[in-house]
Image (cartoon, rainbow, N blue to C red):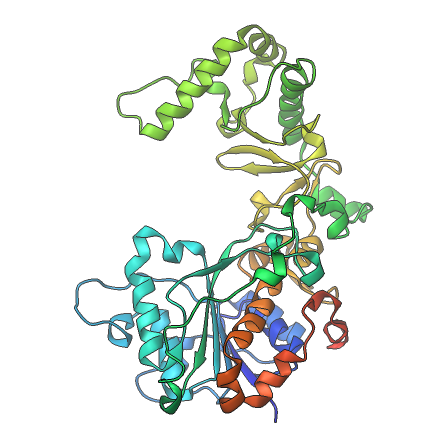
Length: 447
């Protein structure tokens, strides 16, 4: 028996990769974004629909029957005005379209992905609606959010050096006859075996995603930091040399440095929020303790007059590193941040793609794809790097999705023995570490 999956809000196909790793076949996919859909189709060889709201309606659900449903769904606010819970209250959101498919097609397993903020204090109601809806449709799911990041997963099990916390809502359909034995309110998934003995500080991003030391000249030029960026970073590195290296008695604090406070450009205001007042006070205190050195540094660097305001803010997370060029650098809208070159911040758009200090360039599209767990043959041909970074930043960690399915099946295997033994078998026989899964590189070539 062939196990099939549907892939909603599919992007470039991270969930599709998970499905193929288990030997499942594509039944349906959709994404509203034309470039992402094109990349999906050229890599996975499957046509992808455009708009889920056209295929999952009050009337017909024009989606083939399938065993597994994946969805990295947008979290739209649900109304709090009514007293109803479940599908009626989810109406008008894209989660309602998911629920409609579950109501009609009854896939055996569901894996939904979202950002951790879905369970934040401002979204308690939305979370409750999602869980109550799934329960009302006969799905066994935990009320406790399951949040995981690939950098916390041991490389032994396919972990990746990227901090990317995401919430997974993993559910198994329970026929009515089995619900007394298997309550719909389930215990949470367990990832203990995948990261119990792993220290994320042991990652080395240059080693663990095979950083390309030599790029074609045209690509290197595109990804290299600009002259202006190098001058800003060199100035802050000079600051580190004076404050951290030359003076053994100085330990740099964890709060962001605001040079505009030292220059007198930012002062207290009665309208300042508390967080801003705290940062200003900490910067004043640090300046007063090290005024001579800071003043000499400011004078040497022309009082940072050529720096944009965001580049006069600097956050050091490098610990005992001797230079920012030894670390990973983010040129963020909120300022410059430098951390150790162990694991990278979450992949986002090119404007915030991490700079490898030693190479003075941003990560390549291929390197970010490795962080997400995509195979080497995966192609972004025919589009700009900017578009590819955006798609990767919107994608899922294949590591964590793959292991979430394994954890779900392990939890609910007694149910699946009765409802879908072939699905159960396909997961139990798979490798724990998809990175060592030979089939992954044999699925198809880029051509």
